[in-house]
Image (cartoon, rainbow, N blue to C red; front, side):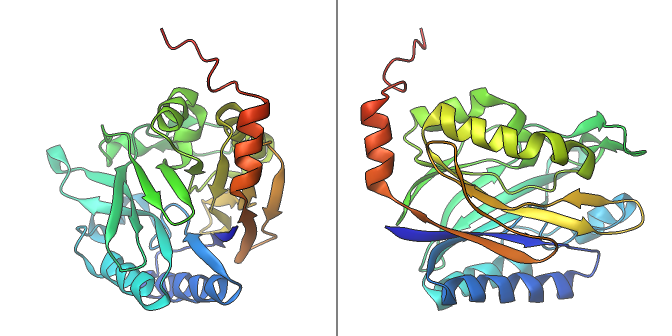
Length: 267
């Protein structure tokens, strides 16, 4: 049995401060015994839309290099929630999640497929695709706590992605997010629990949670959900951690006694 941790942050346009907070939370999670730690979407930068291009980096840039070094130093698996990755077609960016292993090696690189182009009734219109290009690859990677399926935030509303990840052997689904307050209060927990139940998998859901600017407020409630759909840990307000165990025996028993994954009719 291993502990996993979902971090909750309130990132802003101050990248240096965000990285200090992320590093402190990861270190704290490791002190508590976590073997795998997840950071939220946009953990390194959440600022004005017009400044997005200037905040982007490559996969070899300073932010992800620092996360790789941290994973290696602490000997843990680290999900770098998501960063703005430079170099997408048409001068756009990718919203990219990178999974590092205990040696600091890249285990998986996932570029967000489903982009947040919506009006949710909070007074703001979100048009992620104006600056971000969609990814095309479904990504799952083996870790010391199980095979991890990667996704980001708005992906959570598309169950077919998680069906594909579970078909690819995922036993742990990662959903680093920055859900809006308007959608999060009604949908965040329901969707996370549904994905866990449908796929009989653990869900690790790091989150942004708080006031980022006058225009941006996120719901938070970073959590861990078990394969029965029960929330086993939840963060409170602002910065924090949700820490809970991954129990392979529980997962195997649920999949054995209620074998719905074997009953799927994918034809």
